[in-house]
Image (tube, rainbow, N blue to C red; front, top):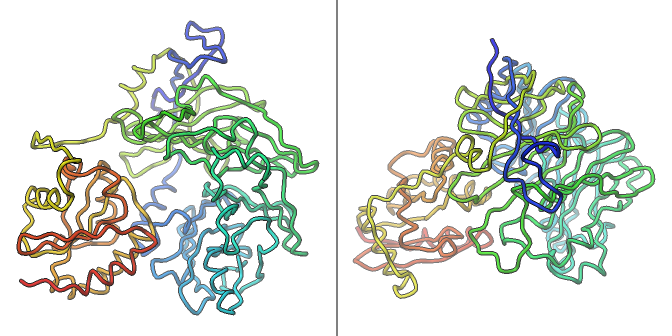
Amino acid sequence: MKFNLLVFLLCFFTSPGYCNTQAICDSIQILISERTFSDSVLCRQGVYYNSNPVSIMLNNMAYCEYKGREISVHVNQNNDSLYIYDATNDIDTRLKLPFKVSIPITGLYFHNYDSIFVFIDRTYVAKMRDYGKEMDDFIMMDSSANVKGRYFLDDIPHIYNGQLDPMIFYSRLSFSGSMIIGNILYIPFGIYQPDLEDNSLMNLHLKLLCAYNLESKEIKMMNVEFQMQDIGKQYNKDVLTNSFDYYIFDNNTMYISFLYSSYIYKLDLKNDELELVAQFDQFHFNNIANDTLENGAYRAWFYAPKYSYVNNLFIREIKIDGYKNFKAFSISQVLDENMNLVGYSFEDAFWSSFNIDSRGEIVTYKKDDHYLSYRVTGFTNEEMSVEEIENQFLVKKNIQQTKSISIDKTKIDINDRMILYLNDLDLSQPIKLVLISSDVLCGHCIEYLMNELKNNKEEFIEQNIKYVFHGTDVMSMVNIINKYHIESKFYYLDTENKNAIYFTGEEMNGYPLVIYQKNKIDVVKTDFSKLTKDFEKFKKKKIRK
């Protein structure tokens, strides 16, 4: 059975919606696609993820298309094992990590069952060496938990050795795709300092891609660095301006995309030459460089294009967040073999944007039916305005406020506003609270807090400690609660986001710790770097019932 759906957007130079290279497209062509059922692989991956104690940290998971199979690798929540799941054949492999203590893992890469790479946080590596303990930057294991190689990154220019500026760090933003050609592992880095807007970058020429020979352990820094025309530009503070994504096309060619830019570059691996091959100045959702931008402006992330060898097309993922009053959404940019624009597919409430499966076919996933996979089989076209696209594809945020309250946050102390907020939630004192925003989630922090609850339930009951989930992304709150099986007595769900009435977003960053008793309030503002220490002090403060 075939289904028709509007899934592509197309900007034709010959169409009535023509856009020149200097203008933003406001009228674009949408292709209507046909699709047929393919498989339920992604559904099985989702079931596996939700039913096993694996980390929610993005850098603690990886996906790979291996011999026509969909493989995922996860660090477990105890940070001592790897779970390898073959979703195509429903096979689960588990192996212990070769560390005596819990090690902060900053990346995974599955090449095959004999070559599984685990990258360790560089700041931890440097700290251990300060204590006189030898520590690898990354290791290679097989599926029997044998360590087959230990590797160091000390010779990488400007890698962390105690300094912060200039400093680069391991940074892989894409969870799938190959990182190896022959014996060469291509390791991507991001810049910690200086920022893109800092003109000193022009003289530093920080190279961000390392070709690491796994046999000789020699390194070569490739010619991938921020482009001169981008240095000095200032974007919205939430735009990711320190990293890039890459895709290995063949033994001689790699495609590069800096996360903040719609431009696509080709890296000639043989001659180490970087060339601009596609630019999309007319794209409606480009990040805008402007030092007067308000914090509420949207932000876009542009990933490297990946190739469908079945359809002979490139598919490039673009993520948009903060656009007007809509939820975050994904767009797939479709390009031909010569990097010419074919069109765009938007996700909507029911269907994902385009992806490429392990067979190299273009597919889309039925979100409201367990992410079943459907193969895209054909197209016709229709023209739409951006307003029509918003109405047909984008999903509005579900923000409800039962009370019409206006508070001047600059004139009322945060403690007094906190009392008003807790009374609005009808939370009785004495009580101890941790406020968790769904809009600014730190995976390490969430895992720490959830493990604290899991291991100290009696203390939580005795001290009446609860987690208050708030923010605009209700589904993220529900997913965390379900993922960690949190009992209702340990949390409160602010589904109406009343928190926004009383506090600014900045005030809620960093998981505020609140003690409320005898009509008095004590608020401790913490952040990810101090949460563990501050939470221990928070638990020790007794309340009187």
